[in-house]
Length: 349
Length: 202
Ligand code: SF4
Ligand code: SF4
Image 1 (cartoon, rainbow over the protein chains, first blue to last red):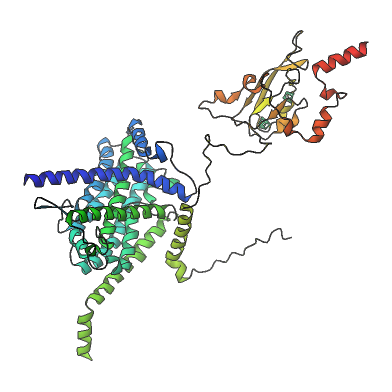
Image 2: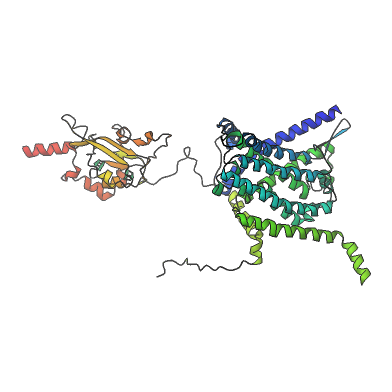
């Protein structure tokens, strides 16, 4: 029991640190990717190739003056970024990072907890994340912040519906809400993307909207709203918001690859004949490869597509994605029940 | 009259289904950005690497001295009048006895300032100057964190007597030839003038 607790604590700490590390280096990667796509070089002064840039940025953030507007509600003002950070870090708990490790006859799963409502948990936590933005924007007592917060909340609520409906089709197919089992099912068969291409597309678009990334970064769109909900924030509280966005990106990349791209599974892994521990470690590496690809994909999209107009965003959410996801559920249902339908029809005629 | 053949008639037509899907357009855009991702950047890593600049580059100004090392500027103010950015200010003073080796003309600029933040490096001052006293060089004006430092006085503008700046390549051949003609008052240095006066009095 003690070993179990120690192991879980270590795992939680590891996931926490890795999330923070990846978020920090995502900022660096984002700037590099943006630079390369615009035929520039990007940050290259801090350390070789500028790899110390995130540390410099972090130090800068901490050294900046901390300003809390006198007209704002102080408690809520601090609660905003804390909530954003908290929810961003919480969703990493249910993600299966790899198979099992075996030491001295004891197996240690590389997943903090495989609750049987894993997907619902992720959903709950992600929807909770909007409170961080809403409270922050409201507490700032600034019209731009308030508009940003408004946009964020309505956007999240709109896209959560389509996202949930896209997932319903996936859950109909897998028959489980547990992320561990969903990944395990894809171990030897085809990845879920091949069963749910439309669902994947809808989920992907909604994931972009949920993480407030371009082309759906309306809550913080600089050209209209100064900084959106974090206009009034400075120092590390601003850093928390920015960090939370990158952690969200990391977690949603992990979830997309778990749900639709086989999670930690390596294609044809059963044919390689690796033993347990080595295979598990390889799986972790492979999983991170997939995650990095999706993080890159996020950035790739950001530096390609311009921002949506707000009415276009709502149009896309309510009048295109939601009907499409309902259609997707219908088609999935028909395909799943095809034998019964055929049987029924042949009885009639 | 048609000036170019790039005329394009804009038609506001309904988008086709393919265009309404957006996905082909987005993939097209993504291929373009990916292509650029692997392209070499256009950045020049200044200050380690310096871009090649033209010989007639218009950079930091220099107030020239003549062959004897006397300042050429006579504080006529024509450069200041010509300057579209109103970057130049000066104060004139009269040359005293014994200062002939310092200033070429009887009147000289005791204060001469160019505000490098206002200057647009158009080179009109250089064109306006009747004494060939001010030139733009290929030196780049360094940045500063402070507005005061960007107002360059005579200490920074007048050419160092031990390190004259060669600007002959900025002149056309015709001008270089013309300048050798010492019978023209324009080309005479202070010494030349003295010699001429002496010759006349003899
Ligand atoms: S270069 Fe143009 S703007 Fe600059 S001082 Fe000369 S005339 Fe003025
Ligand atoms: S630099 Fe030339 S134009 Fe300007 S005041 Fe001196 S002599 Fe006149």
